[in-house]
Image (tube, rainbow, N blue to C red; front, side, top):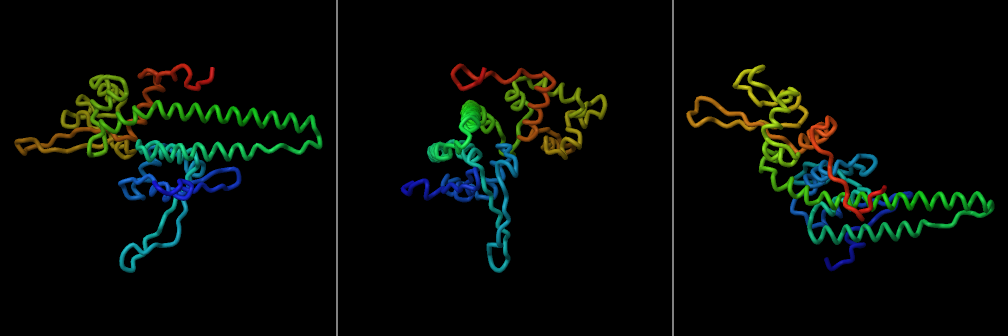
Length: 270
């Protein structure tokens, strides 16, 4: 990058919020995927909330080829979400852009620390102190969240490494990521009637997900013919969405250990 980052990825202020155009971020990150697939994938991966962390704008049609207009969809990202997406690229460019966002936000926060009107000195001083304490707590919470994201980055790389080309996980790999065993995970899924059981549904349907969990997008089923060509095998696979759902559900039921606490000095509050 030879141009200043402020020119490549300008930050826009709207009220007291900072926003970044997702298209300029995508271009500056030098991502090897097209914008539409990249932004949809990253928003799903980050679990961002529309209306709070990003907004979608449907713009004027853009002529993609011939005379057939393709509606252009733009995304505006909060500064926090922009930092997260830059880090998710796990590249030197992503780290550089994330650091640029952090420094830009720090400068902005310093600029807004303006003194109140001291016509009522006691009330103004109290309001000022409350405001400073609120901002201090917000900055501390943000620092803690960024530390947590950094701690989870190696886990995200492990998730990516175990994902097959189909974009899903085998039950064996999912069990490793969830911190349990393959046989135990299969049994838990059958006991909760998430997967079919041979005793209830017949041997040919053993370990196939029930339809409502397929419709929810939690599972895929890979169908392969047997060598003799007379039958097929059905192999359940767990989608990224399903893995996150299982992790949450099993921890709520105390079937998995809770995630480890942050190490000392990481910014966790007592």
